[in-house]
Image 1: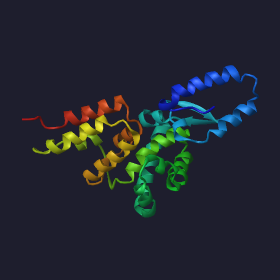
Image 2: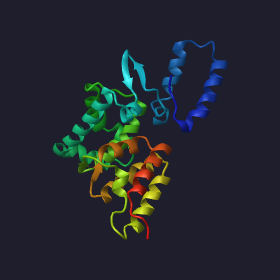
Image 3: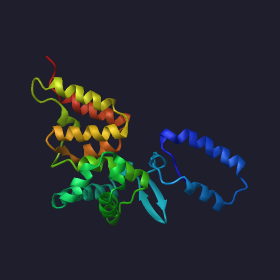
Image 4: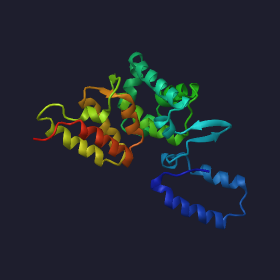
Length: 233
């Protein structure tokens, strides 16, 4: 059965209850047909998942467990993502197409994502539900703008002022980032910040933030930023 993102979840639950009360006599085939008529909309793909689900007899790993877990699928995920990013140096066409994407949705439906990165992850034993692949597409679209990956650190720490006088520019930008809740706005803002940093970023923090921009993530980024900025005089 189709699942819905938080933005449309409540109304969907109300409609689902009404359908269950009034359409109890419908056959399973009729119900499946009604669901398929709704189409594949990203609003129906995004939902907080369990760590693992079953899909056609295969184990599907959730994005949450890939980003934060310590199991083999998580290690394979980060290794393949790093290798895919490195391959963009030899595939400038793919990099250029991903960089031209104006929204995460454009990244999600692009051949370079659907027939490029996702099959590589699947071959490494990492398969995600479409809703999680849509969230990861935000990070991939930002990652296409990165020219240099740092071996350690944190993207929020990179944004912190390192010299006197930078606070007047960097502090407002970071506060604006923390206030961002719209996925499309986050996508564009992170791309601009990557450019501001000269195309340099730390992989894990950037991908995690772009894919899972929650209150918990924002608090973690705020700690990284303000702990590492010079004290105001």
